[in-house]
Image (cartoon, rainbow, N blue to C red; front, side, top):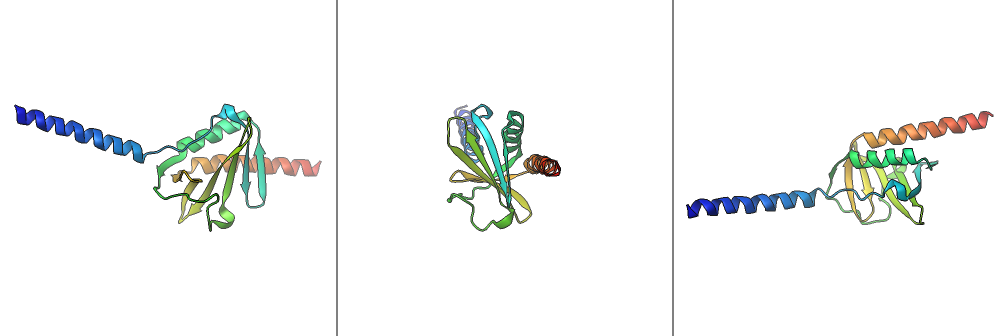
Length: 149
């Protein structure tokens, strides 16, 4: 009986250790609350788009949160990812109380990554890219309409 209790205790301890390790490995992306944001500026190559729409900002934050596949474990030790070139997309979150927070989106070896400086690098699915492309296409269409008027 004592041997059986010891085995159960060890199983519980091992379960707790493995669970704790899993929670630590699955660190989440640190995102602002939509209510705290005044604007989001998306910069891609020569295009810069600033969105003030609370609905679009909330959609972007949801896509960011839902789009994380996994934290890669690679360190982000610089203000800007080095060597990412023309495909780099910068997301600047402007807060109502001042200040900004920045994320970077880029492709590497056919995979999509989001880098949060000094926090980590996350592999993403395509949902975030879809939200950004649709907003950029809409902004470009508006610019064309404005130029024609």
